[in-house]
Figure 1 (cartoon, one colour):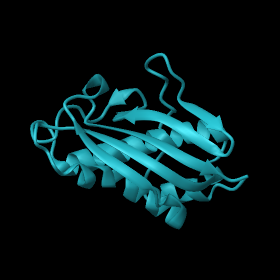
Figure 2 (cartoon, rainbow, N blue to C red; figure 1 turned 135 degrees about the vertical axis):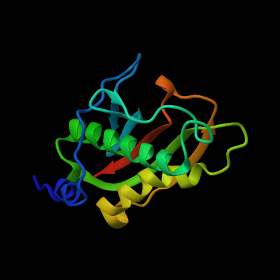
Figure 3 (tube, rainbow, N blue to C red; figure 1 turned 45 degrees about the horizontal axis):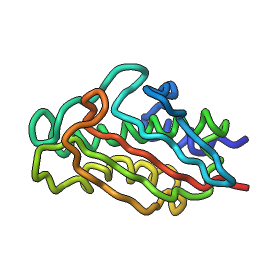
Length: 155
């Protein structure tokens, strides 16, 4: 199979982490038909938390943007584990992003752009997706961001 997306990752100076293990009573991905549902991933890179804490306190919008990018890389690692190739994606369908933030935080979309823009850089039109970006009072392991993704796979 082609490795076009992995080549683009390398061009961007990025590497896929090891696929994160499930941290509870769930599986990292479920396929139904041509849809692949990818469980939420947090700001962890090869077992080490990279961004912990709330935006507006320990984190800024810019560091949280980077956190969302790490979450996207974890999602891509799970996608590759599920399908064997990052080139199996026909279309990103939905990205749901959660931002660990102080009360009243309104810039969640700017944070989740870290994931959305990476998917766009890698997949072009196929990387465009519907999205929700929500502030939360806390996330697993104190992560700054968590994203979950649904993709349509090539037939």
